[in-house]
Image (cartoon, rainbow, N blue to C red; front, side, top):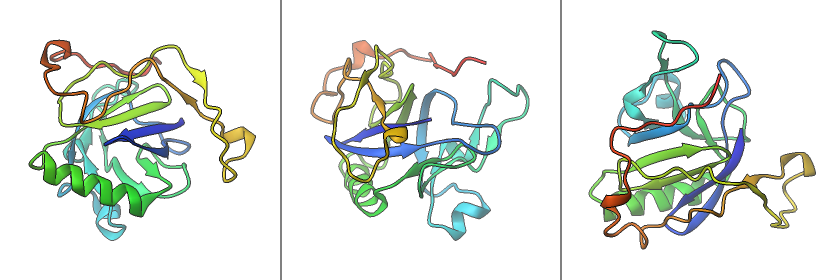
Length: 172
């Protein structure tokens, strides 16, 4: 799966899957920078969900080592970011602003990082992204979801819109 990841009013291209069990399951995950697997330690990755993600496709066989890292969209379930240096600077700024508590929310072809543990996922009706990006081939055009636009400015006072304890997962 490829798509757009929003963080602090910035949009980054991401990919997940292509090897192993495929893309990261849809859902809400804490970002845990100090909890990475052996591969992640060697590649300056950022941990997701304490290096442990339940996999609805394989009950009782959780995924380990799911992280953010630099690359060109293909992974074994990690979130691969093309614009790594800029993404890392933005993520560090957001960690500082929100006292180190951030969450990744993954939907269909879209993801967002917020200080909220759960938010309605951006999985509304997809529209074709008409952004002209010379670095993307037509095969890599991304579906993005404009039905929900969250940023750190929009999250204040949104506690009533949370879906406590509710997780969204990819269908089998």
